[in-house]
Image 1: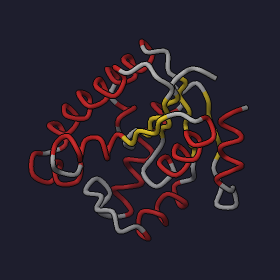
Image 2 (image 1 turned 30 degrees about the vertical axis):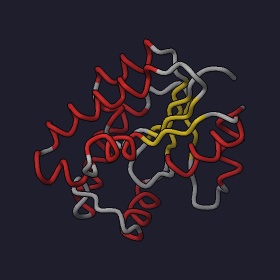
Image 3 (image 1 turned 90 degrees about the horizontal axis):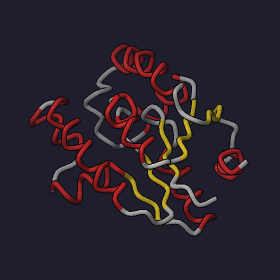
Image 4 (image 1 turned 180 degrees about the vertical axis):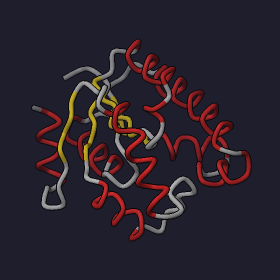
Length: 165
């Protein structure tokens, strides 16, 4: 497999965990878009959203995605939960011939991981807001080339194997 791989899905679905292991197995570089933004901006996505608002963050995120996609080497990219919902980002990813993989985890799985995490998530301040955002993104996520159903019982190895098949 020589194509760059883009892992997408809702916050808490396991994008970073799966992408890290997938990159390791393929001997590809791993890029977490949120971490890339934090390094380049000196602020986390949560801080940017809280200080400048979501529209400003989405602009920064799109520029970061453009930068990450410039390199043509083998890599696995973990998107932020909302990156794929921006049509221009989907077009950019398609133009770079990336394999897109949606980690389709049920809301309850994502929500449990969100509340168990120490990560600040201003776009999911409560269950109702997170659920509405989850539902609003599903149609966009379904545009991915591959869909991997995620259940709590799935091991990372099993999910990675599904990504590779």
